[in-house]
Image 1 (cartoon, rainbow, N blue to C red):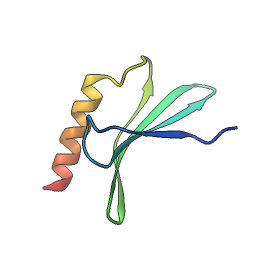
Image 2: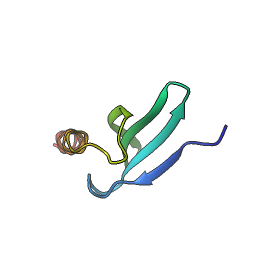
Image 3: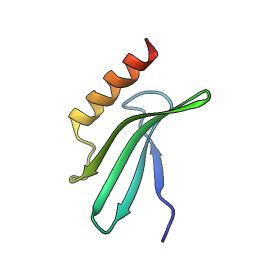
Length: 69
């Protein structure tokens, strides 16, 4: 089984990435941000379309902004 892939997600913010995981039940995504000494998870969802859904992007932006406050 190959390793999961990750790609930058600058549309969400700096240091944000999307981890792509495929398993027998479907395709999953984990949106996360790398901070000094921490990995902050913004969202975990099952991928159903080629593009990351707008509501997921908006949710992650709000959660990371809340974390920063």
